[in-house]
Image 1 (cartoon, rainbow over the protein chains, first blue to last red):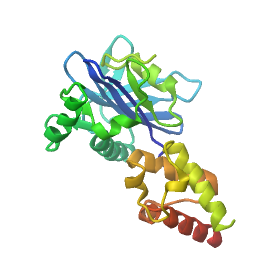
Image 2 (cartoon, rainbow over the protein chains, first blue to last red):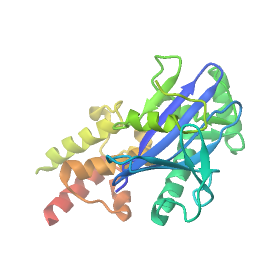
Image 3 (spheres, helix red, strand yellow):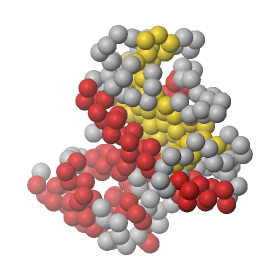
Image 4 (cartoon, one colour):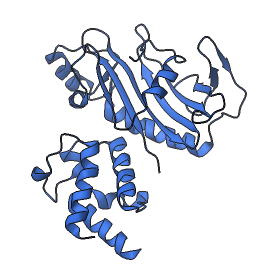
Length: 177
Length: 83
């Protein structure tokens, strides 16, 4: 059974969605997907933290594009290198990632090219929130803690260490506290 | 385990994923996903929570039986009885 964890970071004044990710743990490895702002773009990748829950060194892999079945890179804090096929993620996990990403993005995120965009974008505008290429769906905003300049949501059991580890290796601007 | 005990533990599991839950206000036949804005990720965590609380495995084909509080209580009671 998969126990997914979700983390969202949203800057209500200007930058909008900083980060949206989910992950789950399987044995020693962590698998997931993230998107977030980098300058004015919103790159997205699937990722794997190989041997994260072990005493051995963890290797971070991410998909080069938003395609779990495409090219994968080995990512360190200062460089990324394409890796030879096959992808490091087991095929069944690829299917799970693909399925979860679809549900997660549909339920949490509002894309500018979404058919329902205009109506929901208007709700964001009403609240004087930014409307960008990728946004948090208005009804999901109620889940975020709004006491800080960056609004956040972490589902119960989310391990902040996983997000910090990943944040040193991803190519989006968000750095968790 | 009585149905009331099952119900109380199901509500505890639900409360962990939906902290805004008011157990007294939740109708037994209300759709949990709609009533509590439980999304796919929350629901998977709910299933994991039920597994931890009751030791029952819930195959994906049975997820539809967990749409309401009454459904959850009946499903878990049947599972516990069969083990």
